Length: 205
Image (cartoon, rainbow, N blue to C red):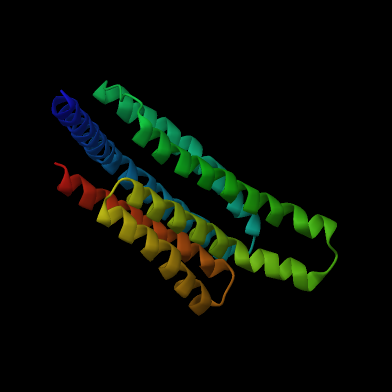
């Protein structure tokens, strides 16, 4: 009787493990196209902001970034509507969603501090330090979130892309120099993200 109960427990654990593994694969299979979508949008908007900022000398073109999530959300909803698939929520999807939600909160907080700091601090050196580090901070957060998401989903492509974006982005940041050209950090992140989506799509086709 004890042996039967033990075997039943082992089978239950194996079933849970298989279910979680299938959930990871389903999430990755469904996420591939969104990696490509957001990677393409990130690449497009970073180049657009860079070109407009470079030719006009006006940093307010950075406000275009607020349009990108709206466009991305609408396009993503359109893609979901065409497929007509409803993804069931589970512990893996909640973890993945929580990771990206945390990134969004941290990134918005960093941007908010960057916006408010010059208004309350008259020290020009401190203001310059905050301004020039914003892009690097967001890239580092983005790469960290992507790497953690890849570890949670047990996917080497997403994990490596996260490290490449975060650490590689910092390496590019310290080698760029000019403030406007920091937009290429986001171009780099967008290309890596889109390429990751293509790799994941190939893995789970």
